[in-house]
Length: 338
Image 1: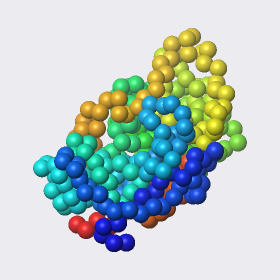
Image 2: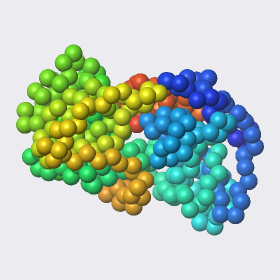
Image 3: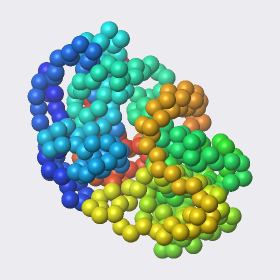
């Protein structure tokens, strides 16, 4: 591809259920010239996240949907190739540009300059990026795990759940993960050092989770919904806290399935609170400062699933929504010339 060509993945039609490759279209145009205050970056890494499914519905939410013909949205790490903002120079590496594109044009004020060598660049879209910050904010502001409590984390091998559980362990809690398949459960226990991990594919999930949580559940970090949520909710203790982060099991449904009867919330005085990480933007810098030394010393563990090529971003999203990722889902869009 020529240096002056920008490749974008745009929304061709709205998927009715699971996204398909032909719901998107690959289009080429010229790399834009930055206007005053703008920066053009060449994408190295593209983040693929569950929230993206919500952007494909034409419905009101906390963020506007992607429109037909528009590039799909997504966080990136890239190299500055042109700048009309004096704070950025060609060759700088930044996070914050958005779009399923080989080149993104952004306001300089929306970008964060990264220092090479502090961590792998991909980490700034995962453990040191939005997923890690989501786990940190959810536990700090809502979950508030304490020593001796039982914390359950769904999607425990994922980019958010893996960090959430490790933070609960650092707080002295007993942590039980829920993940899909023996390989993920083994990694959660052996590498992340969770106290137990339940495979959500077992025939009797509620009973298996109850066996793993003999003292009930004090904090539940929700990433999945569906049958997993039903099993965890049945074990909540009085004064439990529930961090409602995601419901990936139902993102492809045009109508949400019937939920559990929440009458017990009053009797048990349970706190259930939804969260969007961008509500507290100060948490991003706070988390990076706290977690970067842990990543450098190897005490904060993470996994990545890497798909090669921007043209394969739709397939990466489809795989993510099926639970086919192990850890953070990323697309490598371009080379890192460092």
